[in-house]
Image (tube, rainbow, N blue to C red; front, side, top):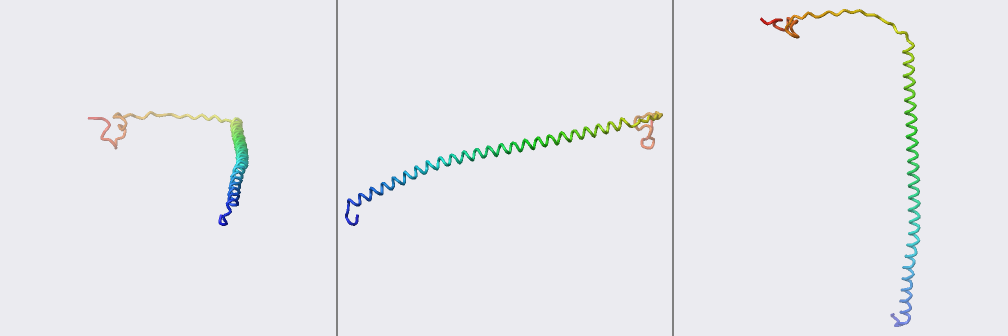
Length: 127
């Protein structure tokens, strides 16, 4: 443009437009390529997350099974101890002891509950 060569300036402008078109086309193509790559990566991450979740679930189920087996084992041991204790009690001879007791009836002096207690109340009977 400084040299006043209009034909050459128009060629340069056209080349600049072609370069801009190439840049836009490269951006679109790169975006499409990376979009597919990003989709594949998301799918891979989702599959990996599902695998980890299934693995965690399997570990949790294994833990529950172990706890359940431990609980059953404890119950069986308790039943065995109870059976052993009951068996030992049944084998022991039982002594029968006869105890004779006599119960005396308290003397009622009248006057209710405190009637028999002379020191605490003025008297057993009202005058």
